Length: 244
Image (cartoon, rainbow, N blue to C red; front, side, top):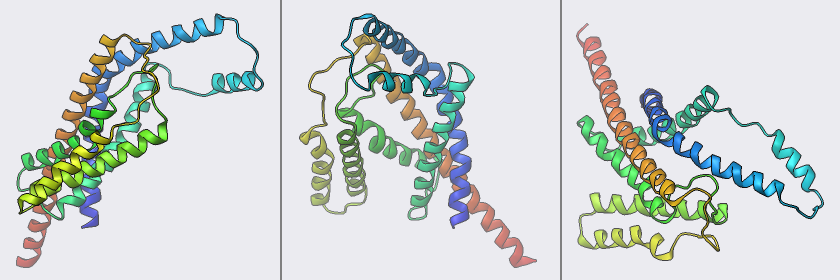
């Protein structure tokens, strides 16, 4: 069982990561590069403006200048694929483990699992914390992480209660759970400010949500298909051993 889960997750993760990196290269990265133009222009203006010397500021600036970051082109694409691969295999491991509890009969059942993952890890958190381009003011990172984790957990439990709950009371509780993080509200900065134009921000948010939707559907469909293929192969091997 463990080997089946790992094998399914690895193959699924590689294929889904390749698809995700391709979509990001075509639609997400160009928008980020445009936003970085505004960010760099703002940094240049800040450097040209007269500033009062602050103790330790020179050392901090020198440290940031030496920090490595991938160059535009193959380095950036390769770094993106590496990150996508880790994320895709992690989510695929989660799906394959869940398939042991309720095996999808068809590949499109896996797509439904993928849509549930999309709602849990992308769509619900994006309602309160939408994807943001570089140069956007945001609230404290730890608070945003806690809110994201609580939202994902509440959405996952809520969806499970909606699908598997036998009584209407469970479904009412599910709706309340899903809505609770948004009623409490996501942590927000004292003032909203973005260096990139609002039109570019809107394009980035829509593109990010669409790309993640395709990624999750592919992840669910591929994992269910490969999981069932492994099951069929195990059955055939067992049958050959029985009759030989």
